[in-house]
Length: 175
Image (cartoon, helix red, strand yellow):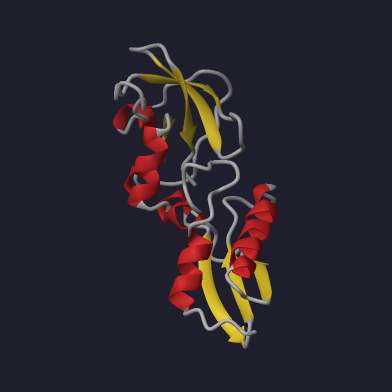
């Protein structure tokens, strides 16, 4: 039997799949779901853009999307990894940012805070950039935070500590 599920519903189903590394946000909220289109009777093609080239979670995302759409009756699901245009933290929806903050992960700062390449420093630092548009603590809201490590539990997050409440937290890095 060939499914007649509308593309909008297929997109909603694929978009609702939780990110395997950040399950508090869906693929749509994270902005990695780029397109869902019917390519023929019982066939759907889905485009995903990883948060960075080589992201190991892309395979899990693709498998979860295939499973969800097949459960809805789609016989053949092709998931393509699309690298252009590249994913950016600007692609995270307002709802995704809210959910990240509620789960204790500081969401990326708005796009306007960057004026060029992201500076890389070794060890705890406070840069002029961070003072102008600081990363706020998701626990107490303080702008007084310190970068402890450019890397955290995943490559797309940095480890920070709040200087006010002293709690460590992840910060979703801006790209």
